[in-house]
Image (cartoon, rainbow, N blue to C red; front, side, top):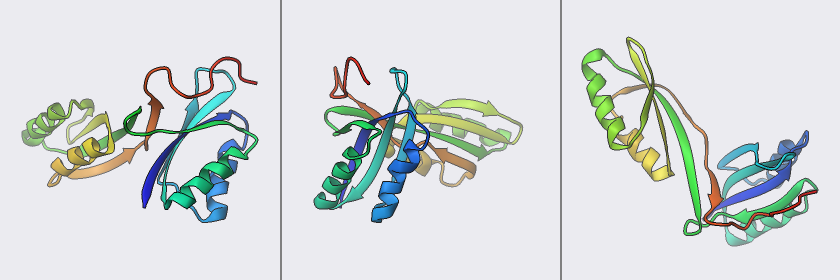
Length: 168
């Protein structure tokens, strides 16, 4: 199975997320990751969707998405021509004598400590999936109290392939 990362420019209208995710659900396709946010252009949002499947299934997903009225542009974010990142927030139970170990691991990965209490620390880290997975692997043996990942988001390198200029 092949993984595909799509960057989809959509009109920022009520129900657009439901229509896009519903397309996947109706056809029995799974979404590995989905992020959505407003863009630099008023009235538009960008969705980043990660999905997996055989080539024919992935092509069908692209074709079906392009038929949706709210969808203005779709590009595949290829590893060589794009930058994709993910964010993780991780709350770790830690006693004061173990705090330096956590700080050392965070420093290796250039993670940020965003909250510290008497018995816990919260770490923020951005990077690709492999970096985040490696960071979490090093935390094995510590009690992870809570963890959240944003999912993949990304853009093409350089000038890019997304629509430019006037958007209607």
